[in-house]
Length: 594
Image 1 (cartoon, rainbow, N blue to C red):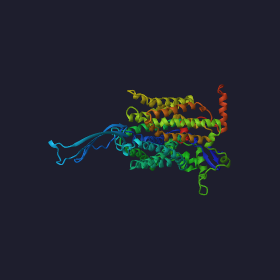
Image 2: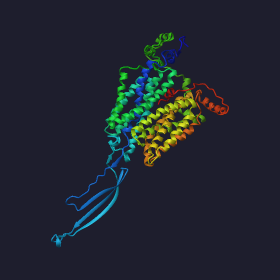
Image 3: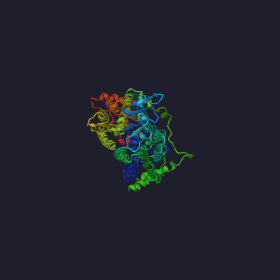
């Protein structure tokens, strides 16, 4: 340990805990508040990407435009009259055809006595069905959507769901890529690169002449989602002192439903899908000026973790001046000593080496399934994450098909999520993790199942049920971040979180296609989402409580902790193992790489 307070040497390199610096800088002073406002602007635009296709590819009413030719030519020997007798959903039609035929047999004088001819008349009728090839669309809600542009109805309806699924598939791929860029090249580079790519491909989506190009562009846009969400979230928390992290975690989480509500207003004002897609990309382009003019600096915590002390020192001193604080003498001693260590060795930046022992004892996601209790816990949490994400995203995406104004419904879907975040934060802090999550899943699942059934003047009751279900699903969703960050043993903590995120991504990719099941039975998508959520919520009760409990360091400790807690349940004993107890929402989201 170095003589400098708060500093230490690791592998010959002098380092210092940034939390020690924040103690003098201030946990959340004016400088940090400015940085929060910029990053809040980044986070508000995230729902624009996630939910853009709710209106860009919104469902519209349509009818088949049958191409019917009635009448006859001057020299025709028949007359054909066709009438549509049934139009089944606009996808196929049944036609009733009346045909009149006549033929004339002339005499040698071409006329019979009295001027009459010997024409014979015959009539025939036929009813036949055929697939529609041309449609007419209701333009009362939208001037144009991808559905009307490329006729994504009937047997092409699945292509609309594929386009939305491509966004979520891109989010899955982008999680690993953006996380690597953020850790290796810095938070600001990750955010600025994501904003640039997102803006460019939003514009390309708007200019797409073909559906295939549009779907590809949407996939790339989805890839940039984690780059903005995770990097911005991490950046703010790295600048925030421990006493303010819980509050800032909730404030950052609130940016998602706030953006959700703002997008409802934007979509209401812009009814042409190409114009709406362009507007979705404009905020990202505008926010790039934050980086062009260097309005916010790189994260000093990240710089210090790589040993770039001189760069971090410049940023820290600027923050001290803005907050009108003073740094302790130990910090100046630390920067003087570290100036020698900050120099590259042989032209290379120092990178801590992993010992052969730690490499041999490395763990991966397969270890989550090797022991009985950990395997059971992992499977339950995977099931819960997969199930909860279905109504969490699905109820927002399907909100435009509920009774009432589609824009108001979508706005309310974001508004109730604000309520859910506060409810989640309060309940899991007071009553622990498994029981509140189980209750949230029960509420979300039951009301999701009930929402499509009210009819005959009670349709708005169904909309109310769907909004209550969204509160339950959203509360379970946000509570899940805290739970998984505390649940898995330290040695497989990242693996546990990663497989949970993967389960949620798979669920979001599948979710759009559930809408196709409404052709089989209209309530079926809601029944599936609600049933899975309710069932997974009941299973969560089998997961151990983690509130105010230390996180087990090893798999063996996890197994032993399960047995000890079960034996001590009736006595009120508490098993103590090594590890850190307690996670705030912000720390949990950072670890989950959402």
